[in-house]
Image (cartoon, rainbow, N blue to C red):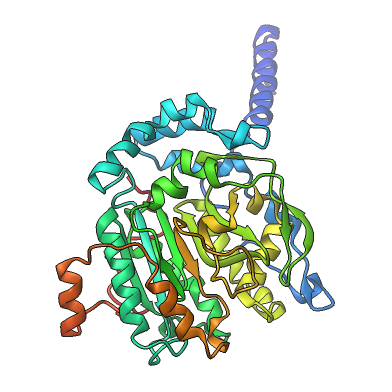
Length: 417
């Protein structure tokens, strides 16, 4: 064995110690941003995770997608200009229940630039959200609906005219083509419709689901000015308020005491019978991708049978803080006003944006109620192309079918520019 000089031995010893320290301080592990935490190899609920047949929320679902990871993941995919805007609004967009009348802070209004854009929207009819909002309608393809004559044609006229006026996209899905693999009730089909909507329209930021039994009553009011802009959201949000349960009465849950505009990914009304997912908004984000994946978990489908997908949403909101932290609840009339005969919640008043005929199908007087409010809607211009398509039978009603005509290369992860 060759004897090393003392100074060489000391040098080698120090080198080994230094390398050991570096190894422990900077381990070679992949970044948590490399793979979304909602990938298919995540643990899912099993039979062992149930109590009396109802799923118990996995704590890992609330731990694996922290707020800062969502923001970092979205920032990674933003264009430089979008990243700058997001950074500015993130620093100023936290609104709390203590804000007087839920007013938007001056700093938020200044950095978002929506104040001047909103005034432009009022005069031109096309707001800053033009091309960024996708309206989604779905129906079964089976004849009429609620016994109302020509209801689909009337809904088409109502929604396409609104979309044309404000510059929105519109998709009408044949929901029966989105049936799930094990014969699940058709109510759950709205989740795969939403998943595919984000893929079909990779440029949109917001996807707006509306049940068929909704009439847009106020065409002058753009949905951006109403609830999607910072000012509109602040005007209609309800903070730290009791959420009712289905059937009415306090559920024991409240809306959060504050929210962050830039991290809001879901908007829904709260009212008499709690939250109704007949009319809501989802923002393109990794959070939304994760939520849709969780929402359609087979255990949820098995457990919730009274108000199936609505109860699934309510369960997620109650038991997963990450869902509440990215959700804003509005007052009922902002998104989900009811006709005067309906006892589900607050009734529509002139000037309200829309009216929802939830539960009308079992009422033989439904056609008469629909006609009554149809005549009360704000007068609006029906574009010539809409009239022509309705006349010649080429209106895009139930024309979208699962998997057909998807744009090449489009995927959910695409970030709206």
